[in-house]
Every structure is written in C-alpha cells, then in structure tokens.
Amino acid sequence: MSVEAGLDTLERLVARYDSELFWPMRPGARVRLGVIDPASPAVSPERDVVFEGDRAFLVERSGRPDAVITADKETWERVLADVRGGLEAFHAGRLTVRRDLHLGIGFLAATAPAGAAEPGLHFAQVLTAAGEISIDEAGVGPAAILIHGLGATKVSMLPTLAALAAEGRRAIALDLPGFGDSVKPIAAAYHAPYFAKAVVALMNALGIDRADFVGNSLGGRVALELGLRFPERTGRLCLLAPSLAWLRERPWAPLLRLISPQLGLLQPAPRPLVEAIVRAVAGGESSPGQWTAAGVDEFLRSYLTPRGRAAFYAAARNIYLEPPHGPRGLWTRLPGLQAPSLFVWGRRDTLVPIGFEAHVRAALPAAEHLELDCGHVPQLERPAETHRVLARFLSAQD
Image (cartoon, rainbow, N blue to C red; front, side, top):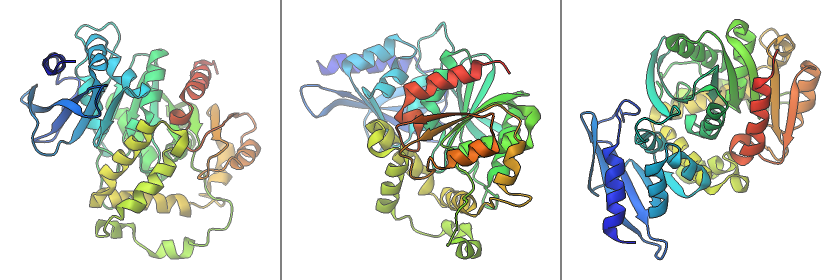
C-alpha cells in the first residue's frame, strides 16, 4: 500500500463532509485519521481533519487530536463507497474510534455518499425545556427512543439504533442531562423522575407525541418512570438489565444521605480506579474490545470534568438511595405499569443480578422476559440476540 493511495482515499472522504449531518459544536476540534499498514504495526499515514465554516479540511497532523479514527486502506475504501461502511466497520472491529466517539462517529456519519437511498445517521443538539440535549438518530417510521446507562452515553446504544432503523423505525439515542454532550446543570436532581421529564421535553422539542423506549441500566429505570408517569406518551418498553430499587439492606444509605454529590466538582478523579470500574460495567471480557475501550473513553470524557463528575455521583447516589416501598417506592408503583414490557437479563450481570427477574414477574405478570449469557450491557455483548427480540417485540400489536 502506498502512502499516496491511502491519502487519496482520506482526501476524497473529507471532501464529502456535510456539516448539516454533523458539526463539532466546539472551536478547534481536530479528528486524526490513520491508515494502518497490515504489514507493519505502525499507523501510516496520519492526517488531521479540521473544521472551518461549513467545511472540513485535511491537514498535516499536529498537536493532540480530540478523536482518532484508524483503519486499513481497504476498510477506508469501503467507508468511501457505502453509506453504512463506517458504522459497519466500527461494529465489526475493522475500524477504531478513540477518545471522543461523538466527534469521531459524527464525522463518519457526515461523510456518507450523497444521495444515499436510506436515511443515514444524523447528530444534533436539540434545545428543550430541560436544556440542550445531544442526540443521534437514523431511520424513518414510528419513534423509538434509546436511553443509555449510568456513566455511558448515546454511543452505547449505537448498535441498537442501527438495528431498529433497519427495521423501519425512527431511532433516536440521547445523552441524558449530565452525560455526554448534553447540558449538565449543577443543581439538578439527577433521579429517574428528573430524567423522565427531560426525555418528555426532548419529545416535545422533536414533535413526537408517543414513542417506544429502549433503556439499558439507568436508562431502563428511566423508561419505567416514563411508563409510570407519562403513560399517554409511552408505547412499548424494552428494559435491558434495568436499574431497579434495591430490596436488600443498604448499609451505606445513612452516610450517603449526608454527602452532597456536588463535592464531585472539587474531587480529583482517581483515573486508574475509574477505568477498572468502567471496564467491568462495559462488559469486560464479554464485550468486544472496541466497545469496552469506547465505553471507557466516553465515561472519562464526562467524568473528568467537574460538572460531569457531580452528575455521575448524584445519579449513582439516587440509584442506591431509591426507596423500594412506600408511596414513592418503585416496587409499590410498578404493578400499575400499563405499557407492554420486555425485560432482558444477563445471567452474569453483577450490577443488576438476574434474581430481580422473580420480583418483576410477581409485580408484572404480563411482562415478557429474555435471559442471555452476558453481563450488564446486552446490546453490546449479545447484539444479534438482543436486537432480534427487540425488533419482534416492538413490531407486535397491542
């Protein structure tokens, strides 16, 4: 492979950039593109993409890039030829995106061939009554809103978004307030009711009256809250290892009630410890390597900022302290859920143990259940099985 051939492919790709599909929304953003030589571990050549006006330019590499995308020449040529090439190569592990996935994948989405027959991936910052919310969406048809887990971002729902868009859905994945590229108010509650109201505010801004919801972990808990508080806006619910109020004793609850999550504004981030935790949450050995690395990158991108850290602590604290019983208790309210619901459980999930399934069955006898040999992130660890069942469940008639 000649250096010139690799550079020519990159130049043609960058020349196709469409700012209406994605714009970095930050001054000085820089994406580094690398062409891997299969015969050598070195990445050569490398060039940077910079953004000016409504255009992108390929320039000599310089400084520290915000996102890094690497692939071999053949993969870059497929990306150039196919509207789905970049995302499919990323899913398959032939193309890697590191550091800032919102920026890297957004750039790939904005270089799709002109006049593609199918709607491609589109990124947007949506101004809502809850503040600015970052989304990506694809497809046309009935709306399905995808909600990520604690510490994750909309990127963790990207395989699900692609799968549902291919099934005739308008699939929308969002960054919840406090995470990713959405607003991060310091004094927000960051509990399930707060997040549910933010999702409804997004629906209002997008002109969506009613939607199905797919949520992983915290996102599953938010989806349940949407069904309980806003049944008129809720279609079907797909709960992927949903966070649920603890039923056993919570020994740290008295102490946590005394600690303000706003301390996260000042606390230094213990990066090695955080990385180890996030790798476990992202699926560990069960999750493909690029997704585990991506999960760490996306988490740290928010966590290493004071506001993102405070939001994470507040949301984690609220998960732990949520009352299981009483007027506000989840398990007291759950039998009143009207929306048809599918629960997906991981047999090796250490965060939401599969033992919760029995309690959900007792509270919601009509709900459907699927058990998979995976951990806490079924859509990344077992995507084919998860998405096949989601497509079937969402297409069923009430």
